[in-house]
Image 1 (tube, rainbow, N blue to C red):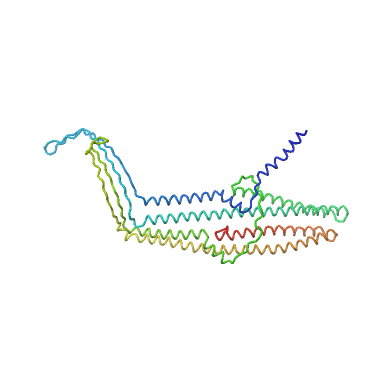
Image 2 (cartoon, helix red, strand yellow):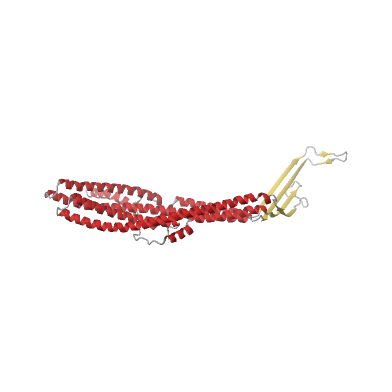
Amino acid sequence: MHKSIKLCFLTLMLPGFMYAQDIKKLSLPEAIALGIANSKNLKLSQNKIDQALAQLSMVKDNALPTAKASFLYNHAEIPTNTLSIGGGNPIHLPKRADAFVGTAAVEELVYGGGKLKYAEESTRLLSDVARLDADKNKEEVSYAVINTYYALYKVMQSKSVIAQNLESIAGQLKQSQRFFEQGIVTKNDVLRFQLQQANVSLTGMEAENNRRIINYNLDILLGLDEKTQIEITEPDAAMKPIAPLSDYLQLALAERQELRQLDLQNKVADINIKSVKANTLPTVGVGANLYYINPSGKFIPPADQYIMPVTLGANISWNIGNLWTNKHKISDARIQQKEVGIQKDILSDQVKTEINKNYQNYQLALDKIKVLETSIAQATENDKLLASKYKNNVASAIDRIDAETLLYQAKINLELAKADAGLAYYTLLKSTGKISQ
């Protein structure tokens, strides 16, 4: 019997232990760091950076000298080996012949109009563009984590207020039942409190369902096991002071990755123009060649039966036709550069309107908190007044329930407003291009 009791106790406690193992407590900074570390999008961004750096290394290799070597063995069978020309003495050739021929060459481009230098500069700038793209994706991942974290915080705060409200309703229900037994109120009053309890319970069930959905989404976002129950800590409740709008605009124009990318693209376009202009310049190269000729037929020939000439040379080439055909290519490159400038102007205007919108939304969120704090004070006072009147049988059950509902809704609205204000602040920072400031 004693063992059976122990076994039953362990069986009842086991789910609790398993559940505890699946709980992970995370603050907002910890969640952001975890999301960045496990983001598949950021891993893809890093792969693009590695690809850009590999491309840069390949472009640098183009400036290195080229070298090649070859070795040829040739065997000839000569069935008709007698040659007579003009009735003179015939020439007798061997019936077979072997020869070994080897070549080695080294070439270096001394001057190519600067095209190799321009190609390296352009590729280096494009690798910087890839890094900025990774930074932008990092900001997107951080904001996605923040957004989901605040969503979970909002639903948890709602559940907390709902639990408080249910506890209060339970007390009111017991009181109404006592009044009913004493003949002070009717059965209808008791039913009204029971109905209110059922409605709030349904709201609690919906909140719990939303919590499960958001928790699962956050697990995926952070790279955690899907069964992990995330226990969040309250984000910084102190509302951040808001700076002048001009400060955020200036910061965005300097930090937004998209604008910085267009600046780099403009530099790439400028280098492209220089590279096209280089088509009209001559190229200069030098080279060295080594030849090995061994007609003796032996792999290791006797002395004086092979030759190894070495040649040194330089070449200058100039496509003169580019002097009059290249101008249209330059015009096209300048048009492309102008397009980049226009794109930046358009994006700058979009950034300004986005900053202003998020700035106004954050101010509105702060104002809402002030109004809701006042409304809670009023709703609390009204709830106390109606509770006293109901106890003295001066107010009806409907009035009592309405007062309690108003207070319950005001509390939820305040918690949601605080969460919305926190998220609005991070949204404003995101629009500047730098969430962590």
